[in-house]
Length: 150
Image 1 (spheres, rainbow, N blue to C red):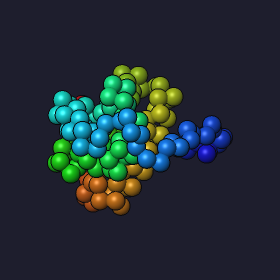
Image 2: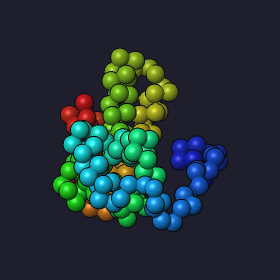
Image 3: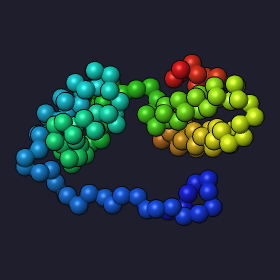
């Protein structure tokens, strides 16, 4: 894989899981779904739920156990967040960089980092619009991001 904003190759990612079905010792699908709903009600994000299930409850893969992703399970139970977690995290990063650049306006390295982060946000928004995760008229701006995640 090549890097997005650098003219070089990077390391390859992790290899996919070799297991094809849920192990017999793992939690049953209904128990996994109830645990996901319970952890979401506590205010955990989807990635925190996955880490919690893996580390504390011994669920190797939610997708193998239930046949659905954590976000799809939350969507079925009407507990999914307004914006996807990856988009929210990128917007948080952009807000932090924007606040830093208000104070340090000559910081060229972080000015570039803000531009690259906003490019990633716009690319993700384009994808989420095409898959109908967010509405067609949703627009990104740094000021709106401060209100949404700040």
